[in-house]
Amino acid sequence: MRAYEDWVIEAEHRGLKISEVVYQSEMENLQQSEQELFQRMSKNLKVMRESVAAGLSGERRSLSGLVGGDAAKVEFRRKTGVSLVGDQISGVIARALAVAEVNACMGKIVAAPTAGSCGVIPAVLLTVEETLKVSEQELLLALFTAAGLGMIIAERANVSGAEGGCQAEIGSAAAMAAAAAVELAGGTPRQTADAAAIAMKSMLGLVCDPVGGLVEVPCVKRNATGATIALAAAEMALSGVRSAIPIDEVIDAMGEIGQQMPCTLKETAQGGLATTPTGRRIRADFL
Amino acid sequence: MSRSNVFDLIGPIMVGPSSSHTAGAVRLGGMARKILGEEPVQGTISLHGSFAKTGKGHGTNLALIAGLLGMQPDDERIPEAIEMAKERGQNFSFRIADLGDVHPNTVKFELLGKTGCHTQVVGSSIGGGAIVIREINDFQVEIRGNYPTIVILHQDLPGLVAQVTLLLATAQTNIARMLVSREKRGAQALMVLETDEKIEDAVLALMRRLPKIYQVLAIEPLE
Image (cartoon, rainbow over all chains, first blue to last red; front, side):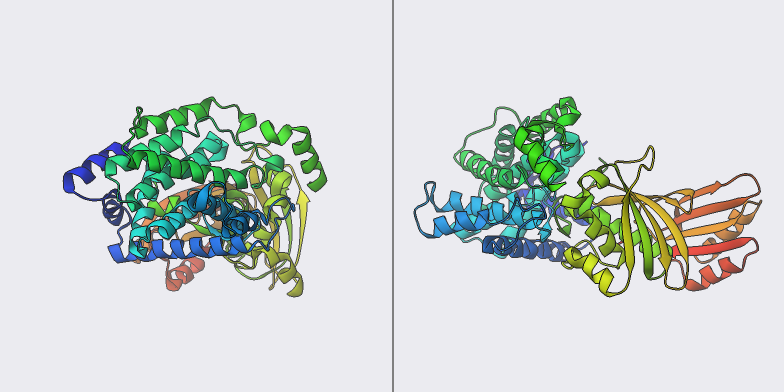
């Protein structure tokens, strides 16, 4: 079983970024050239940008009618300059809501790592892009860092709400986004590991309790809160704050917690928010 | 989970909201279309388990029909699939069914093609957009759509498997996986072969000329 720590050590040893270690290893795994890998990742980044833009326009509604238009509200407030939390945080919230809304409304998104958690990574990366003016190439590299960590999570635990609850979806996305944000901001490979660990620790135990079994409530808003956790974790790691528990052990703990989580709280809509009086009423009204 | 690659974690590009209930459903429809081997004109689609319970909110119905119309999981026309089928005069109906002890996300297609072919296909969406076809015309199979696949309906008799694999060997086609099943000894049997290389039409034609082979179906891998 692979460990993220192995990549950190290799990157430190060879003076590379995590993303470089990841794509070099994937060239062999997939038998594809560097150019092919970057072209494929570039398509993903393009769709991420399109889904942010589509969601911010706020025109679509989901099949149930519960979701749509909230990203536009946050973006409007941000644009008026009265945001309580400042431009970066309100920006990441608006973008994460945007992509998650597009997903709920049957629009085109990039699963990252899943469809239900598709808002976190684009929101964080595009917000860092706006803040630090990083290049397209750096963004693509950061996506390899995120994906590399995702592979480790998928191998050691899982990235599926049905198997591990929301911590496995939004939790994994937040960890992946945090690692990518640190690399984009010029942090060290070690700091990507710390950021990922801090982000995932913050979401351990989060259950998957979707109302009506739909990827809408609470999934869309959890994308936004997950994205802010990713930025907070990145900020701590970049300041030199260490995670007491290393990332691979955090991932293992997440997997274990997922196993211990009852089935009623793993995407089956049989517990939690799904079975609140309002959750039941929404389900009955729609289905 | 088995070893993945970066594009399993950042990707696929798809129309939401759910990799299993939407993207996987498009792929199931697509496989059913490939197995039918022609444009479907009519069909009954039976939804089981979670597909039946939460399918509506996930656009599973739209996604299954989009697949039957030949769309990919990233096709932005998926939300209009039912309208498109109606416009083309294709008539699909849905029902809720208990398909037995199967994966919660399982669907059964009973399809009629434009030249009158009938096919019955059962498949499951097993997570992350991955699918598996479990049954074709009441025969148990296991087709994941990762490889070029041939499905051969034949009579159960000695030596037939060897003749088929000899044709593949001669064409330098490597078999990745193979599954044989039969109704009972000496009755109708089914062979499913997944190969590394695309199977040439000439090889398929030779297979169809072998004695006691009733049907040879070549299914291209999903994109």
